[in-house]
View 1 (cartoon, rainbow, N blue to C red):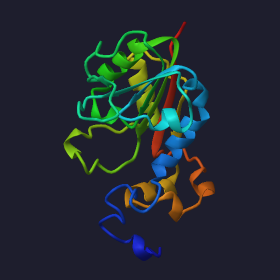
View 2: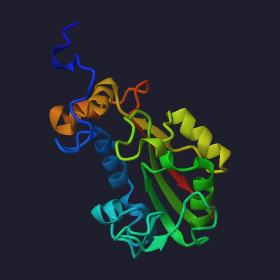
View 3: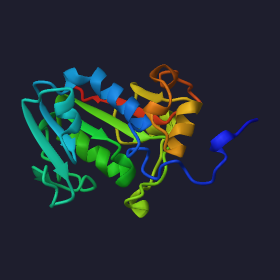
View 4: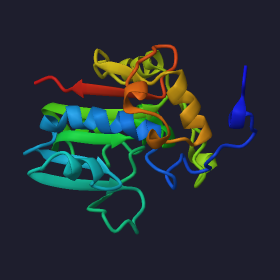
Length: 209
């Protein structure tokens, strides 16, 4: 075994690699959101914190930005996802919730999001399976999920769990922990999927009509 410069007890980046390039988990999240752009193009869309994906890949007819932070300049609805009913019922055709569930009560947030979707509405969800603690707020970064764990979470909340996927492989996992980026490896390497080494887990859940 030749460790080279990987034999280290601190990562190359303490910020997911964001100051060096594109973090590897974003490669998977971006791919998932781009693949499902039809779900939030021309529809009533809710996205948490900012309009990143709703405007990057889609063109919503109506867009609501939800955050618990009342000082968020992108905010259009001040709400706590943990409070069921804080989101308006049956108001959205698509809810975009990327890398949020680890900061909230998963069951309460899923119930709140689900009741906010209109019949036929779609929840697009991503969660971390492997990631360093949030350097901004370690005490609020509570959970990680395997694909099986996210299926169990969705089932417990009464949501369909038939479209849950893990994304990543052992190289991507090393990159995620070390703060290495997409620019440090190749897209072809990152696109190899190894079910034992998910970095990010995605779910697409459609509300029955």
